[in-house]
Length: 213
Image (cartoon, rainbow, N blue to C red):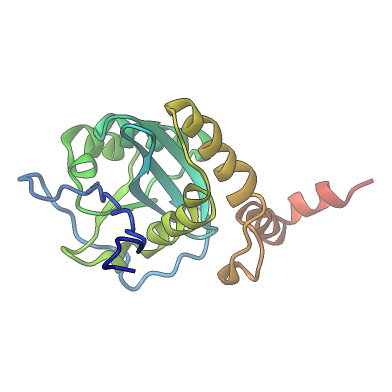
């Protein structure tokens, strides 16, 4: 088949680097190596991935609550810059209103180490945590989300336009991942259901309101 040029030639995938750690900005210590979160808004993890469209790429910045695995902030853009990361951060802050001391963990990318991003984290009294160099397992919660997004959504669709991505990705995050995607680490519950269960368990007043006729 090779001699007659009948064999299939696989299309080469083009990989996009989303983490530029070659910068002179401050790098903060990793605060989560031995940490297992036990409540919401204790640990947020952030990461950026890319989505191929017909002639270029779009980028997705996402923030998860590591306790429930819920995606609490996200932003899409054709530009891989600090504004993209800030869009996800502001969405998460507006939704969760975290108490001072919440840990924000990310890789060593320039978007997260930038003066503008660090200024926002400091303004809202986050503890800043950054992965060790060359160790993707330090951000395993976010890496797991991106793997799920890629295998269960991105690889199943052929996005042609920016509008396709803007329509499908938020729908997958909100309606599928947060509401329906089961996690073995959450006793096979989706993130939103797990958070609701924990809220009722930890707050007797909330339980009374829910069970009242």
